[in-house]
Image (cartoon, rainbow, N blue to C red; front, side, top):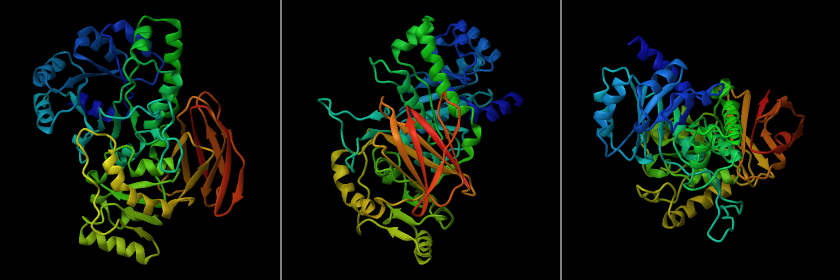
Length: 455
């Protein structure tokens, strides 16, 4: 029981990677890296691997999938004294409960990484997450052209909207298990983009190497080791600054939605706003109340037709205090989503268009906490301390050419700005007054950066 307690306490700080070897000597590649948790396929489970990992302070998680002997594999993981198991993929709640029952007295932990539609948002687990996600980057259409977003900016495939929604639903540590596209080599900087796409919303990407780099790394090829060390340096950028995890989503513009109104989708309203470079924070419909609206200036109520009388009272009080409430047209509901889609289909996008026009008119060129300029390939997330006296602005560049001459405008008066970039020392930046706020210029963002602004 004591061991189980320490495991539970350590779980929020696990930094996971998929490890494709059962050779205990391969763990030497994890020395002096932030990685302290490995996901192992059952073919790589063996007592020597588990024992060697434990001796290095590395948690071992056995991967289980639907369609296999879940209870039998769970018992095998117990006999090997693994740290726990990960249920990954399209499984239902009874299957997960079966595994939990099999491990009830073992001390092993169970982590669920289902497809998005099966995430238990009310879970009390130390880690919640999903096996489904988009591979982040600029979306290229057939023929090689760049797809445009709703504001003519390049459309960026990102998991940030979904992860912001998940963060609003559950305060547990969050993992996303998206893998590299098959038969495709991934550059080191692209790995940096993928992990930053998750990290800027407070989640962790389960590091998964493409087949070529994975093979070369395990073979100890010199260039592969150099690339691996750089990937781990990108990981360390976020993991070595644990105080940043105390910052929460911040914006004076709130979007009220839930699972049935697009919260589990990518490329929906939250991402459309991100591509427009509008700071936004989600509020779960089921958690809509006076407190959740604190600090908001504008609220988009996607679920206007389904809220309770008490929630309507909270919104009326918000409006009475000077807030602006955006409601869809009467009778409008978010179009049903296919269980197998991560993004809206064309029919859904057509139905969303009317709501988007209302949203765009109310938010375009307005500052709800921070705005960025000259950032067509950059997305950002705005976070703040509970007292809103310190801000973090994570900026991620989704193309392989550095973003340059970036301008950031922060609402209100601020005294200090410090820029963090991987592999570079922190840099204090000058601030200058602008209308209703403070301006800060960033000369260059190769992959990702963080701007910390304080009063």
